Image (cartoon, rainbow over all chains, first blue to last red; front, top):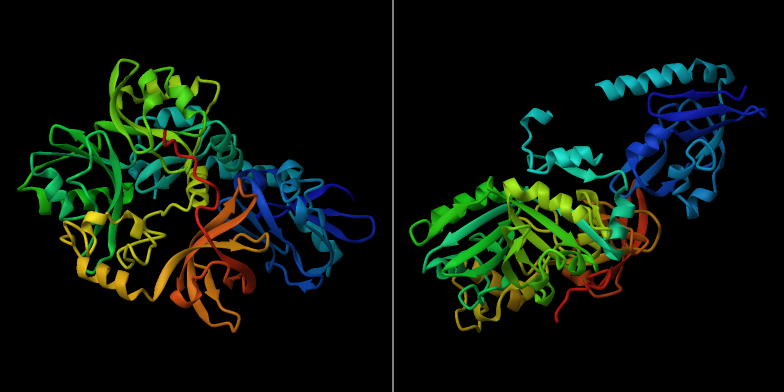
Length: 127
Length: 374
């Protein structure tokens, strides 16, 4: 399954063939944040859903990136240390944040799909 | 706060047309950034020229033969000998020597002074001036009738001289009445970025035409408050309410340079401003804490209100402004530290999300100022 899932906190998730899940922030999120200058990536350890796993710093402010599901972080994107601007330039690709093994593999499919996320963005824009 | 309650500058419609992201600031709906983004806006200003709408700031005219003498009773600055056509940085102090606001004062000649004060303080400043000066000179707020533009950056002079050749001869902190597009404006060679540039006081009704004309010049981009903040931070310039307030004196804020020689303890017109005894005492005895520059030694930005500790973990201060400096290419901050730790290159640590970030006490400005001094 390669289709993306989303959280209400504007993270995207992609289930990989090896059972891990890749996480990043959406194009909407990076645009709202502005120029990203630093990303504090998570430790390789278990996090509970909702825990602040990473922090993304734009020129103006720091924002938390929350663990979308219970799980263990197994890899972080080393390129973000030297090139945090990848989050702006390629949020769904080279700007990924980390990979984790979800405690419940089926939980990923319960998150927002593309249509539901697009509706969320539209509702935000209309608010 | 809903946008209905916010005030608008004369350029509000232009900001929206340019695609600005608007935020509430000091009661105004202001552009924090344009589609270019804070980083590129900042770099553009240092490389070419940026146009800032700072019309939210308060412009006040003082008129009368006693205006300069009267204003000296509120600021530790030489106003009486401020030459016609010159501007000076000043601050209003309170009876404890704390800072009520910082401001620019220009001498227009003909017994007229022209003040620019901070947006968030302007009503309070006006009341302060009326209370203490009202019987000695006319205090005339220009809040609605005039807007303020800042044109900043190394190309600012060649842009503005296309409209008024005489501005090229002005030097840093000079102030002049200049016709721009046929409209009487006040132009000062000053700003809040550390770059050469101008601030232009223009009648509200003529502001949009002037802004559009300046933006049509190839060197000029519209710059929002986000880049204004990172530019002034790299230049080591204080932001009122953050880097100084009623609880900090000019000495603690490292603004001794702004206290004119004539007004110092050994000066020709020593004291005579609110809190003078406290300020002089601090100058002679030293202060317990002081504002210093801080350079994080890691990539992590250190923001306002972060605690600062020494090697043993004892809290020794607090960050008052901090963020990322696009020209420096790294994080930059300033903070108040216990005096024992304020020597250059002293290693200190900020606490960011529960972790220590190594910093070093550093000289300011963080990037060289490039004012035009002739």
